[in-house]
Length: 101
Image (cartoon, rainbow, N blue to C red; front, side, top):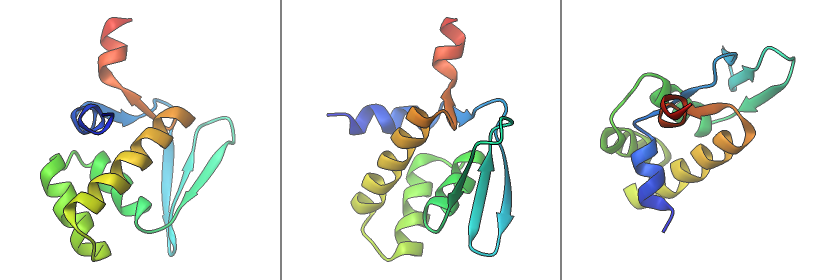
């Protein structure tokens, strides 16, 4: 299963070096320095903020579950899918890979 690996990665991921973001009324907009951008609405904007603040995984899931009125397992599925997509798209990097380089 991919889920436990994504959960473990949540403690080691961070925004890619050139990624910046701004808060807007509807969520966040990510920028990567090459003018590429991505808009994040709720709940992804909240998830991004919690990840960037280094909120521990279990607490992050409780907050996300409460905010979205879903179960913690539902929050884990949502968070894992978003983290996987952001990593694939280059918005997040895994510190473990940087250590190996």
